[in-house]
Length: 281
Image 1 (tube, helix red, strand yellow):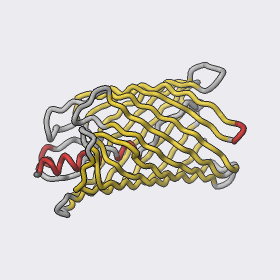
Image 2 (tube, rainbow, N blue to C red):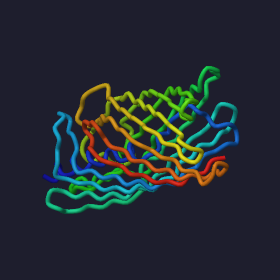
Image 3 (spheres, one colour):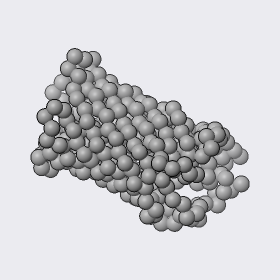
Image 4 (cartoon, one colour):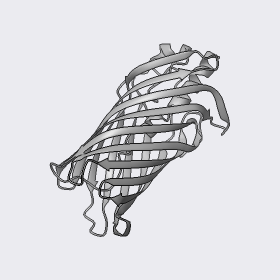
């Protein structure tokens, strides 16, 4: 029973970073000296997950709070760097109403992006590295403590293309990535010597600016592993975002998002709500 509870808690929490973290996306590369910075708070709620067979499993609930810093900085022409650093406070409750709490750093992400010299539309290639900022602890496997992530190192190569939609004062982009999932762990692996399948990632966004001070966006996010196994998560998320500027010339914005997992395997069916304060120059 203890092993099952831990498996349930791990599966429910596995998607938190996927929903609460920034998209790390878009083909618009920042010019040298230009930057974007965001402080955000995300709430993630789930009370079920879908296992490897596609069966909906219940009996454990999860609440997560993620406080995160995200930034982009243009270094040289057509080249910028990205950084994401989260702190996660997680609470899981099992079928016996026993609660387990964990607080600590989550999965940090470092990215580099190069804007291709294509005149027709913005196109960029981006490489990201996911580095756990925590160590897995095998002593937690005896109880259903939530975990901050899979605890291993990933890298993803993205191709991104987009365009402005002048007729509706909007934009759209599509990007596809190949995620190489390694077996390089930080700390212990508390369950077994597991391995994860490489995954195809895809993100699409449609944005609309109904006024000078407001922008709205619909985002879809898909993860499809190349193999079926008992660990690698697959999911399809849909989300709505809103951006509010202080005034048309202000560098400050308030950003909000609401995301929902529409389909999953080895992952939770949860809802994420986020609020952030951003500054760009």
